[in-house]
Length: 248
Ligand code: NDP
Image (cartoon, rainbow, N blue to C red; front, side, top):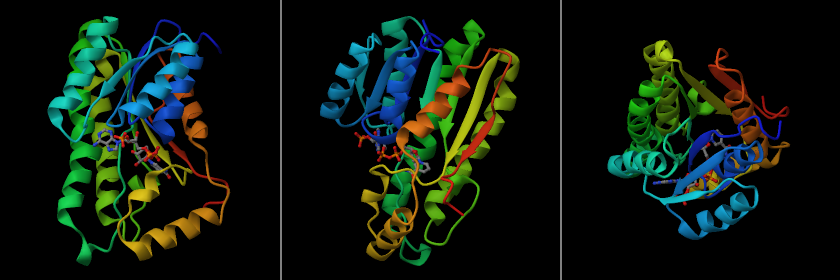
């Protein structure tokens, strides 16, 4: 278990908090060397210290992944530092919830640029090296909102359904290159994600809903991601839906 990912090179986006932070730590615990990307440098630096203590030789990449050039740059910088990229975890995301009639399309555009286009740009950048080496694993973090579209989540669900659709098309394009693609669909996880909801009534309702149950913790999802990437090369776990036991 400890060394299952020994000598593997991973890049985790959105690693400054929540699921991404926990995933970077879990991959490091299992022996991977890990590059971590997000905007908040202080948070990444603090995580890098923990990763270094685990022997993960962390690479800190400050980047705005809503910017296509940054999404490509973090992949190239990881390859330059470590010589290759084996595992790309496309996790960075935001969740802006509000009724469609009142939606701030500027914020929704940003959400699409980050949750979908940033993920696609990082994936594109990673494919060249993975194809050349005929191995690699791309893990895309979607959501239960990529399966079920709830009221007030029209924009967010559009991004997460988009991630599921993109992941399946990607898998079918690259499986012959021995590249694996997994999409992870978490239910309610206790993270900072809900803090950025601008629509007060929606935020209050969602927080009350989440507080009514035993939410998943970031590490629960991190362990699922580590399990997927730790399977032998002939096993590709395509899709994992993980809800709290208490979630309908
Ligand atoms: P957090 O808010 O804790 O983490 C989001 C991460 O994304 C942070 O590291 C943040 O870093 C990063 N991020 C946000 N905007 C950008 C940007 N423009 N450029 C680079 N990085 C960015 O929430 P979670 O851990 O919950 O979210 C992680 C993923 O999990 C998201 O894709 C989310 O949609 C998904 N998810 C979460 C669920 C939940 O209930 N929490 C359920 C289902 C899916 P920084 O601000 O430093 O840039």
